[in-house]
Image (cartoon, rainbow, N blue to C red; front, top):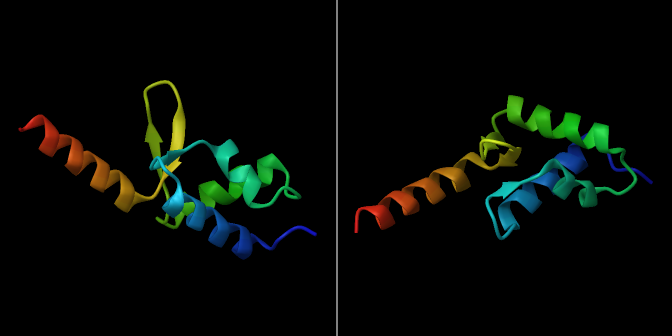
Amino acid sequence: MALSSDEIKAAMLAKAEKAPKPQLYVKDFYACDPDTKPRAIKNIANDLVKEGKLMFWSSGSTTMYALPSRIKNEETRDEAEENK
């Protein structure tokens, strides 16, 4: 049985918090609810971006999703390492 949109959003945010890397592909979220079609997962991820709970992150060739707080922490850490 497919989860509700709110349940999928909660699962996606939990996955984004616990993932080893701060950036995730949309396909990484498919496991949050295998019964939900990939297009629906992408639409929910985009809704989370609109709500400010996730943000887009681009490597230059690929667009990924990330928690804003995790991206800021990674960028701050990278800058600190460069300044050493």
